[in-house]
Length: 233
Image (cartoon, rainbow, N blue to C red; front, side, top):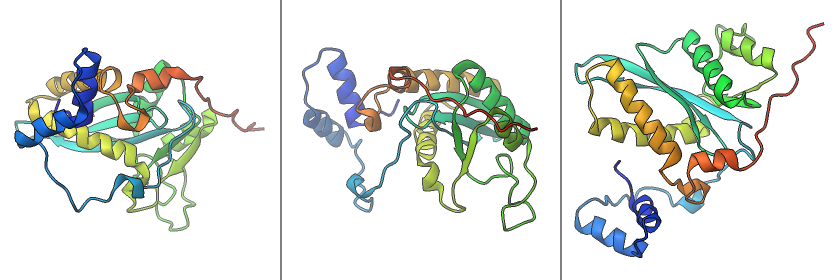
């Protein structure tokens, strides 16, 4: 799973091995598995934000992937901002507006709908900037769906992917896994994605939630819900 020092250490402790984190670090360093990155900013310099409750905000994005045959596909995900719980992860020939609404309603039917969403300004998520710099364009199907359920829509600033940093970081972890598990078809890719999602949610301890699993954090406290939509009358 290409786990790092902290994840390996947590797994070892869970199996009853009294090994220290520094020992794990030394073993990985000797094996050439630690790549120094002095150019990276220290973690303490980042201003972090996380929703207070599960389902208070869902992040979504999609990313590109290439099958071993050279064919390109796209992967869409929905991630709970509070717990990092990966609510939905599927592969598609192309992510369209219909893909967004279908995957959102599928996740909502299983987990309940969120109070708000956070995405970039891609046309599959918003058309408010289509043909107008003022953000007064007509809503697309996803925006209409959110208004129908009373769900607040939030969008990151253009060219500022760090606003959706949690799901952007997820893509890094996922692609390392996909590189180690090449597949030739979209059906095979979906099997790998399902296995990754299960591991990510139920086994992989997450640094940002005190080394708990996303599944544990997602169920720990009551979930938020959408506000009542405005009366159309």
